[in-house]
Length: 217
Image (cartoon, rainbow, N blue to C red; front, side, top):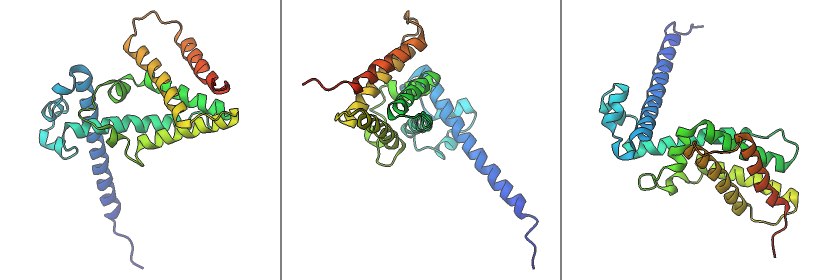
């Protein structure tokens, strides 16, 4: 029986190292673009400035992304992927649908406050001229999965509470509440807010209390 090539392991490790380097460089590009966006805005962002920041040629950047709009799109997707992971794991051990929904909403708020730079670019910057909402919400994409996850959590809670409200409408109302809280806390840090933990918990309690109240005729 022929033995395997003694160079096979070496060849595999070279391939793996190349892949790791490519992924590392891709992440460097995204991180540099995020820093420039937050510091100077979209108009200042360019492939050349990204290249200068990471000390590569602009040609190298084009090997990974088509243009700066493409970079912006992937910055948003990256944030949504991290957010989906956080929300999908939140509250899975909770005993009731309402508590599982509450845990997911709390995870949304915590994510935004712990990742303010990512959150600001994806949710708070006016970038619709450069990245279309339709492309972000593409069927089967991470945003679509994130919305489906939250609508499912909402639906379970509505069924458990005996409510006939529309799950998508309730999800959007809860999202608007959580986004408002996150964006205000990020955008106005000097406002004399009450204790942050108390504010967040009170906000979630009040928003979810509506699920237990019948619709006004």
